[in-house]
Image 1 (cartoon, one colour):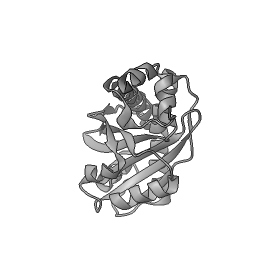
Image 2: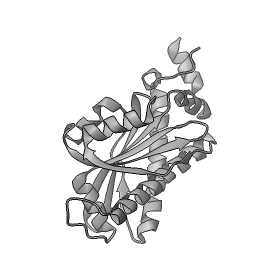
Image 3: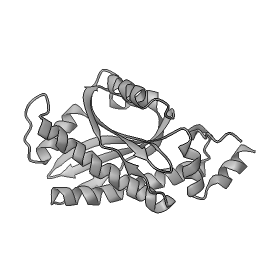
Length: 213
């Protein structure tokens, strides 16, 4: 049997399991982010779904919509990538919530570092959830920041990381801090050889075998 498993091959049960891992990760992330800010924060996950990467720019209104993005490489038993995208206006709101008071059209080095640190915390929380349910020891790389049009950022991401899957697990995320609502999209993108490893670790490979007969 080919070891490469596509998201499109997964059964509904396997997809539900991946979504549940995303939900657990979101809960961990909310707690970690509140501790980082030192104040109450509500974080909700309106959607957890599988999306085709080529369709990601449409989630923001089209390829020409400016967005801020932070990407990381995931290393370990099931390597892959993580990408956090949010509209530019939401990125500025997030900076203001951090008390850095951005009122311009660009970010300072300090503000970029703050955004990268937030995504570092959130992605670490998601990976902790993944590690807890799979028994893996996944770790993340240093985050990289970019601000550009949605289509350009996605294209750069796919060129930079080369051979990645065509689909990702979207964890739509909303923060509510002091009356401010900030929304972003977190993408977990397994490497081409990693999806089967994850499904096996979740104890769900049998559902693939029966589904493919």
